[in-house]
Length: 222
Image (tube, rainbow, N blue to C red; front, side, top):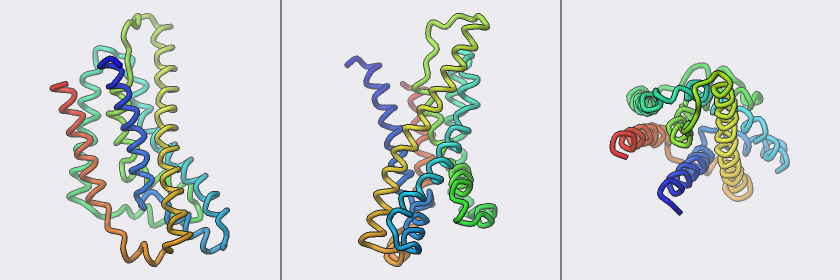
């Protein structure tokens, strides 16, 4: 496999691994699925809870990617766009390290509205923002003519590609979250999670800083 192929493979792996990371993070909602299953005393409720969680997460990631999908057509701005995306992720990670308070808006959404809750939480935690530098690394506009028809086709292709990236990421998130929820429901219980699960706020913020820093390093030195 040539160097470019390995790069693309690595970026797709990063999309999947970020989904696994988000799925394992209880902040993305899998404890709510466990709670639903325990209250209904039915594992089916656990599985059904992940449908709205997945939809909300997918929409949040897609919304974060769409603005970049629409303007990546401008080939001459690709370096600047990737730099802006990396700096945005880095800045948001630093902000989360400095200000660890949770948004009050999250407390106003009842857990019964899982889709809306998942959407708002993913936006507030920057889940979609974390994917943007990886998505831009996968985008390519080589050999595209400057005509309006070609530009429209490229925009349509990039919007569809953004949906594909969001879908792959969400699938990895849901599979991981479902596994975590099933283990908690079947063997561990919510009390064990509440007592033993460490706070991932700092880890989440540091991961944003790491993604932003790595993206900038690749852009400048790669």
